Image 1 (spheres, rainbow, N blue to C red):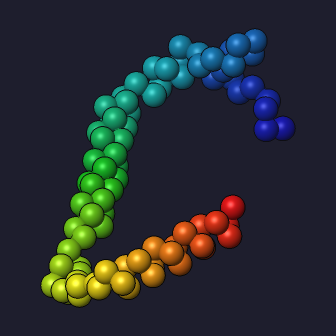
Image 2 (cartoon, rainbow, N blue to C red):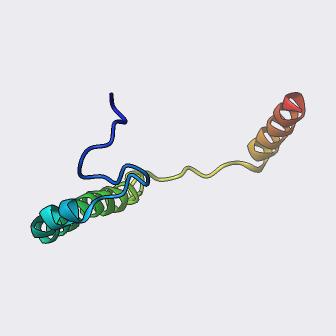
Amino acid sequence: MVLDPSRYQDHRTWKMTPGLIRARQPFFKKNMIGLAILAGVSAGIYTYTYSFLHKDNDFADVPIPPIDEKELEKLKKEYEQHKQERQ
């Protein structure tokens, strides 16, 4: 069965026995180095992606056309009507 305790676990508390702790001890430093490398690569990829996606200058060269006051008022009225319909 899956939850059967092994001989390397205490049968009452499910904690590691001193024998298992001694057996895992030589691998601790290598495991921590591997963890640091994996965490560093993951953090580097995340940071690179975050900084790349926040370079929002794709439309910097597109000029914004000036808008007429009458057209602006018309757009404001349409916006207010749409806003009231949604409520």
